Amino acid sequence: MKRSATTAVLVTLCAAVFAQAFGSMRQKSLTYDELAYIPAGYSYVLTGDFRLNPEQPPLMKLLAGLGMLPLHPQLPVHDASWIQAGAGVRNTQWDFGRAFLQRNSPGGERLILFARLPVVLITMLLVLGVYLLARDVYGPGAGLLAAALCAFDPNILAHGRLATTDLGLTCFVVLAVWAYRRLTRRPGIANGALAAVLLALALLTKFSGLFLLALYPVWALSLPLWHDGVVVPEGAVTWWADRPRLRRFAWLVGVTAAVVAAALVVVSLGYLTPGRLDRYFRDFLMVNVNVHPTYLTYFHGRFYDHHLWYYFLAAFLLKTPLALLLLLALRASSQLAHRAQRSADRVLLFAPVAIWFLIISWKAFQIGLRYILPVYPFLFVYASGIAASPLFGRRDVRVAVAALGVWLTASSLAAYPNYLPYFNEVAGGPSHGIEWLDDSNVDWGQDLIQLRSFLASEGVTDAKITGMAPYDPAFYGIPGEYVAPHTAVGWLSNPDPPPGIYAVGAHLLNRARLSPDLAVDPLKDLQPVAILGHAIYVFDLR
Image 1: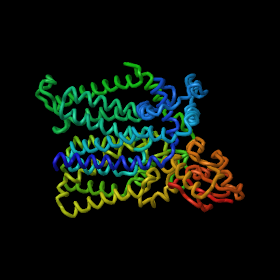
Image 2: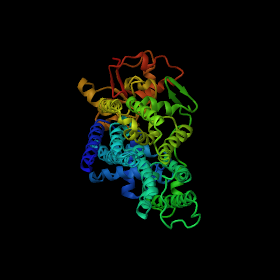
Image 3: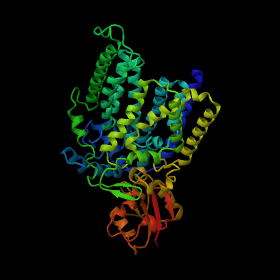
Image 4: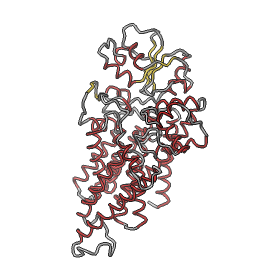
């Protein structure tokens, strides 16, 4: 394919991402984590003070703050929550977020839209990054296939229009791997600097970016085992000159150490503390301080007080489009039949998938597929290798790949605009999602705008409203009474609740099942008059 045609396809795919993400985010309300991230990011931009939300690095929050800058929102630095955060009091970010919303309402919806725009642009950058990695490993045809898989994946789109950290980490991880691979094949100062900067951006996006620091030693030790893995510049290593494999090993260990060291310097600059990393690693120790230590894992109708080793694997199998799973199976079968893939590239692609699955399954709170979102780009790249396989010469295989691509695209379009609660056909689709998983897999507080439209169409002005995101729905101009979660679910779990119209998040209704006094299961025993975005249940109990 000519370069102009390739460029046209990539531009079209990026435009498709923008259209899907922008159209969707206009219909989605502020999610749980955005309540903390967006105001914190704006405070970073205006003050250079990182007191709010220290449990995640600042990059994505800074970008959200920069996105809002043209609108000049007010920053409530005289609020008690800001002062307390400066004094070291934890968890004031939620109060500050509510104060920020109140100070900038009405007109707050436009602020949220502008805060999310940088993430949409980074999602488009992710599509390009996936293309670059797949092109370099398998060729331009595979690159376009991988980019298309990325552009129409519901899970990528779910987080590619929210001002949170997961999509940014996913983008910079794949770009860091692409740049490192490029450095091993085209050594030079420019490529080394690019690899260091992209690694630093991943580290500044989310603390799980530190998993990359476990991958670099793996690559440095394993890539020299294959002749195709490393190119050593002439004269770069003068000892062991008669042993090419040891020369490659010595050179790559040195280069890897230099890339990591340079990246850490960039990280220190990101915290405005040149040469010092104490703030970064001190904040790292605060990861998950806002997650209750006794928070129970939910899977398929049951709650568990311990980690399930298979939770993220099951979430992956339930929430990944079936078309992509079948394409991965087809790719694996072609690889077994024709062992043509380079071993070095196999390590580069599979090591991140293995590391993320293993560490996240071992340590992370089991509340969302988003924690393993970085594995998806590498699976897109791997699946795209079918286009470079000898098997692709068969007409039936090309037809099958095209059909799977159409199926994936149709799944994405059918999910619009409700990408977050997407579940595949094996799970029964998004309408059955809450039967399998909860929290950010289904309901993150994102459907208040749809609730506003529904109540307006029904002429309802006195609904009892409880969403997952901890702020007053009046921010979105929704009339009615905001009811605390424990109160609302307590009423709905009672055989004789106070009469009225209730609008309650699916996650909260699911957690109501934990009550020892549960007399009524709202999700099973009550008939909703509407289910909005698969995330808000509306009951008419008048």
